[in-house]
Image (tube, rainbow, N blue to C red; front, side, top):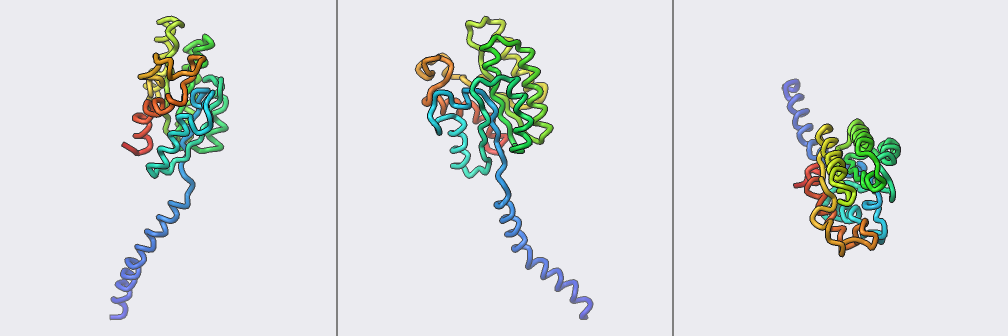
Amino acid sequence: MPRSATPRRRILRALAALPWLGSALAARAQASPPPVLLVVGDSISAGYGLARGEVWVDLLARKLADQGDRHRVVNASITGDTTAGGRARLPALLVQHKPAIVIIELGGNDALRGGKASAARENLDAMVVAAQRAGAKVLIVGMDVPPNYGAAYVREFREMYRSVASARKVPLVPAFFAGFGDDLTLFQPDRIHPTAQAQPRLLANVWPTLAPLLGTR
């Protein structure tokens, strides 16, 4: 009898320990650092002309916090940056922050400077590949080129975003200014940078595509 009872007692002790094990695992999960959501963009995401806390990236961070999402938002956007600049900066950012998600919002300055869409595409593609190899999910945010640059150039840049997103199987926000790009009251005097009032619109354009990457509907 003593020999046959020993395994039973071991099983009972193991079962009794399960609640403690669950609590320990939960505590460990809470202690682990939050996953990073990295935004690599230009002046639109850096908040040119805006006060601290007004930028759509700041609104995103607050929205996540309000929903109890653990992602920590890191805004690595730089005014004036191009796809070439982002490509050069990204490797160090990936090592430093080890992001779970990378939002790439670049290309507008390439177009404003008359750069070739083919070069921007190569840079954007390289950024997506680098982020994916680092284990991050990627979201591309596309920028529309002003119509005065010519219909062919506008189409070329628009297709540039789509082709990279399709080739690398990553989600795309086709036009960051969708729904308000023609409303000059929502832009600063330079007619390039959105005002503080437009920032919720920018977040609203990004959120439906970003939410699935966060596991949020």
